[in-house]
Length: 269
Image (cartoon, rainbow, N blue to C red; front, side, top):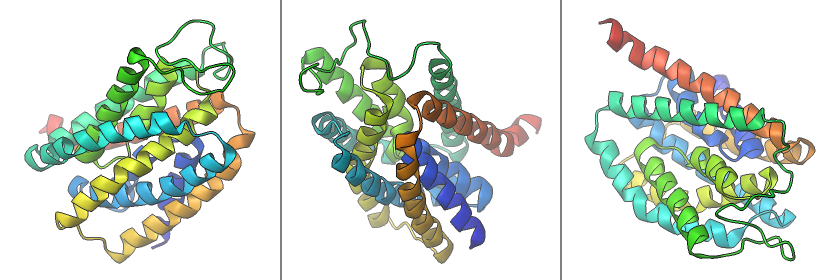
């Protein structure tokens, strides 16, 4: 029980700080509590979904959420989530673990490179990107290119949410960072809202599919929600650069540990 509380709290804090820390839920459940990937997926979806809902309320209260962008991404994510669930039921667990680990590691490296650049992450972007904020309102200037960009990010996050049992924030955060000039705090708040909306469908599908949550898992879920509250209180006091670098370090460590435990034995046999 203590391990579940500590691991869940850590995941919640990371999610509250970075908006993509929920990707650590699956490695925490597998490495720390001994769950298999199919067992960990529904627990991860529920814990991250509820915690993200709590975090999104805080973001809405602070005026950080770009809610139109969140709705577009969530709708596309919901459309692609069933495909991800189908893949999770038809692909071997080893293949899913490999996909998850490699994707997580690649994204961690990219985010680390961005965080270590000399330019501040929250500085105004002088070069045009696919989705630019309007100076007068602070909202996205909608056009076909921006709509397609956000739709693609949402669709991919929904696919991974259904296939891997993750919230999708590990794709949403770097995706918005790459293609928009929204600051890191706004990205985190918007990501949490998208995760909340996508998780509604994926959690329902998982439960209807027969997923079972034991007592230890509920302790993990509850502590994740508490960790989220802590993370959201800390986040406003940290620069966006440090938030992004923190997530990149945690994600890369989780990826390497998963590959060592589940894939290295296969290579040695």
